[in-house]
Length: 255
Ligand code: SAM
Image (cartoon, rainbow, N blue to C red; front, top):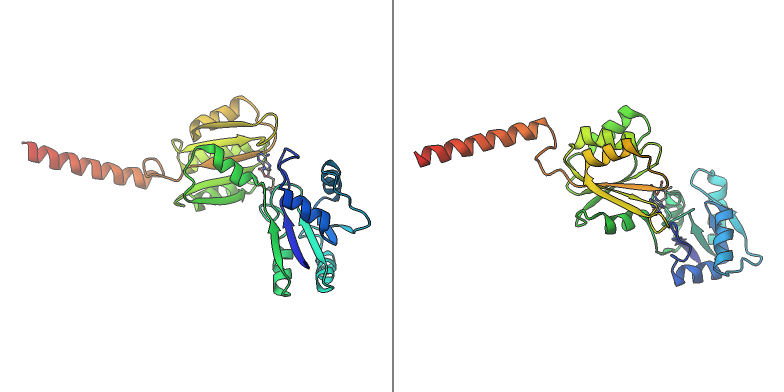
C-alpha cells in the first residue's frame, strides 16, 4: 500500500525488531534511512534483500531536496520505509519534518512500532509511569542546562532525559542542585546490551556515583516528580510554617 512507513529498529540487540518491521522493510518500494550503512547491516543480519530498490539517506537537516525526493516517490504512488539509526524515528531522532510534510500532502503516514530507549527505561527505573515528561537531551552549556531543569522542576510526572556519558556527571550534579538532592532518580545504561545497568537512588547518590566512576555507553536519566519536601526553598518554608502551625494547634488543644 502506498504511503510512508516509520520503522522502529533495535536500540542495542539486533533481534529486537518486530516481524512486521521486517515485513515492511522487505516490501516497500523505497527505503530511506538516517544512516544507510546501519540500514544495510540490519537488512543483512535479518536476511532482507534490498535488491534493486533505492536506499536513500535522509535526516531532517539533509535539506528540502532529499525530502522532496521522498515526497516525489509518495506522489508517484510508491511506498517508502523510513528508519533512524536506532529505536523509534522522531524520538530524539529525525523524521518530524518528513512526517509533517507527508501528512500535509495527504499521503498515508503509518508506522511499524518497536523499541525506544524512553519506554525501555521507564519499564526498568522503578519510578511512577502514570505520567512522564520526555525532555530529550538537555543543552550542553551549564547555564542553559540549569534553566532547562528549572523549567521542568514542577512538572507533575517522571522526568526522562537522554544524556551523553561525557556530560552525565555534570547533569546529575546540576539536577541535584536545581531539583533537590533527595529526589528519587534512576540511571539506565546500555539498555538491551551486554552491560545493561540500572542504578536507582536519590539524585545526591547518583551524582556522587558519577563523580567516583565514569559511566560509559548510552544513558537515560529518569527523575521522580517533585513531592514538595525538597523541591525548593519556598516549599521548605511553606512546609515549616504548616508544621509549626499544626504543632501549636496541637499544643493548645493538649494544654
Ligand atoms: N530514537 C531513539 C529512541 O527511540 O530511543 C533515540 C535516539 S537518540 C539520538 C540516542 C540516545 O538515546 C542516546 O544518547 C541515549 O541517551 C538513548 N539511548 C538509545 N539507546 C539506548 C540504550 N540502548 N540504552 C540507554 N540509552 C539509550
